[in-house]
Image (spheres, rainbow, N blue to C red):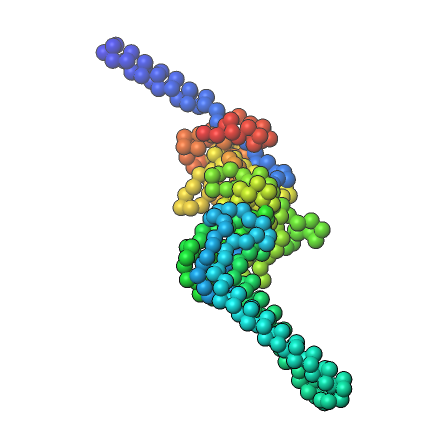
Length: 355
């Protein structure tokens, strides 16, 4: 009997000691921080050359020569393709002969007109025939010149759509030419963000943006937002922006993709650690500790996100105490002991505190 009573006392003593230890656990809490900060907006983008054109045959004929290779850098005026020019050379010779005949006829008629043998109208007709023949000679020379396809500007030649010896028709695509010295990067901005942009933009300074490339590295040259298209897309509610990036090393090519990162300043932003939040049915909550040391869940509205940090627009103030750690160890209305951690210290060391 005494043995059983002793065991009962031991059990009660252990249970009491365990309960006291539980009460001794202190949770870390902190305050939201209000400060000016920068956020980064991320937009999927398409990268295009500032000048990207199609090179097409302007005359029909056999492709006689190709002077460059695919992917080659060419200079303005450089000869790229030669279409067999024999027919057009013959046209030039024919037109040249006809122009010479017309010139002789005009000179003879002028001599007769000077002697009043023929009328001034006949002289005018001879002059018109000579001018027509000269015009036809000029046109023949233009057609002959079209058999040589030259680069209209410095750029990179794309793949060929025809091969040596092919019979090409007038207007047939030969290749593309890209000027990659400056790249145009297009990205779509929602209407609300467009309105914010227009409110904050100044006429004297174009906003800078950065480009995150497909290899998850930043392009080393920042770009500037230069233009906004005229209309919103009715289906998506977005409007395209265009940023220009210098590309001196030629790293960027037409058709690449990336992500434009836009840095936006926010005044008096309310910041909290991401780890202090939890989610229920796609809504964000925090545990707020009241004056009686009880935890209460509270819904918050997140407007922006930084590494390890949320920017809160509704639900909290700088005077609230929020649970920083141990969110899974407490329940609604639990009474806890806590230690307040300096908010600035928590925010500045979130990499250290991140779980």
